[in-house]
Length: 221
Image 1 (cartoon, rainbow, N blue to C red):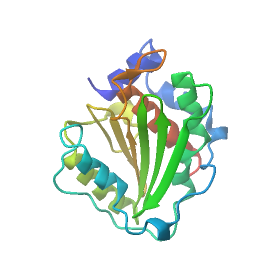
Image 2: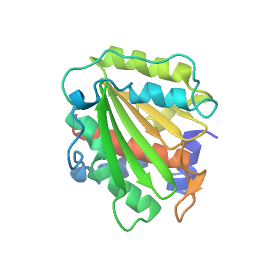
Image 3: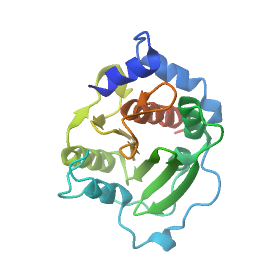
Image 4: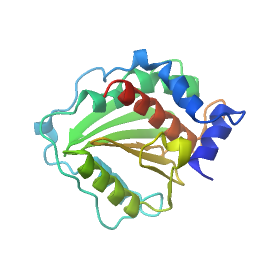
């Protein structure tokens, strides 16, 4: 099934156009915020492999190929404010709402090889959201295309569902979007096929979190 179809089924219920989903996210934009707490400094993780590439290699046969790697141009310094948003209040609030959680899930974050990674520790498993920061839009698109080529069973997200950005999903629960110099990867592959009181699919969860973050980025570029 396409991600667009899953999102409409799980979230919109009455097959409302997906632009309504973005409008709904826009209502929450005032809460867009960077991650709380400290981020591992680049010097502490300078020898670590890029999380996006290493994660793909670890999932042989379950969403990504293990051969090859995608390596974009690197950026200097620490993660940007936009990247930090993936571990901020807005995705946490969205998770609490979708999964009916009593409190924010525990998170850990790292910064290595121009990739900021936020791991959400849920009762059902780990949800990993990462942002690869490239030197420019062209480099980010090149990295996105390489990721899509390496991904197993990748399906482009098209039409209204991609919100105007290059995007694809994998059958096992990943959603990847490219905007400007960023590549956003929401990886729910460690989670069960459905979860939460509404039995949302992990693909729909990955998509909803992606659009929540993208809405923040559109409002706060």
